[in-house]
Structures are given as structure tokens and as C-alpha cells.
Image (cartoon, rainbow, N blue to C red; front, side, top):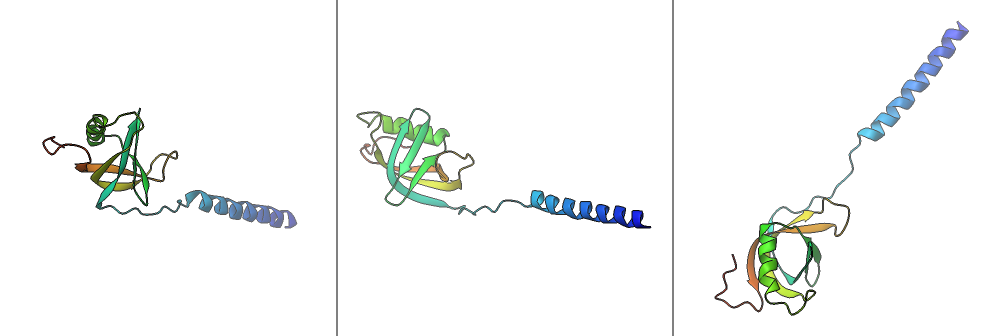
Length: 126
């Protein structure tokens, strides 16, 4: 009888420890929810090699590289006097959490180019 009691105690301890570990593995990390609407952002834009940044008065965002961002980079490159010059722009963009762990916490996905300072009005933006 004593042997049976010892086996039951060991079994209960093993089962109770296993549940604690399983609960820790099943918990999901808490993530902040980022606003999903489009915002008009005005700031200085720079594109170098394979990365772009939009810097405003109160923010700095990495820019998701897609066709609209590449179009903006092409338009801005005509106005730059050197590779690291920042050109003032105004864009409509969606602010997203950065899926990568490197760089900025948030990136923007440009949806529409509203204005490029220094570009003539006759230049088509889109």
C-alpha cells in the first residue's frame, strides 16, 4: 500500500509540473495594435540603396519598398544633388508594425504621393 501511495504522489507531481510548462508555451505575446487608417504624413524622404526613410518633426518611419515607394524614389532622385539629400514630400500612408526585428518599430506603406517639394506642377506624380 505504501508503494502504491508513493507512485501516486510521483504521478501527481509529474502531471502538475507538465501543465505549468504547457500553459507557458500556449500564451501568446502581447502586441500593440497599430491604427489601420491612412494618414497624411509630411516629412523629408531619403532613399539609399535598398532602404528608404521618411522623417518628420515628431516621427521617423522606415518605408515599405513597393511600386509606389520606388516611384517616389525615382521622382526624388531627379531633385537630389547627392545620394544622402533628403527631399520634403507629403504622402498618404498606412502605418504598420515592422514585421522584422531590425530597424524601426513602425514602417509606412505609401498609398498615394500628394506632393514633392521642388517638383514642377507639370510633372506627373502618379
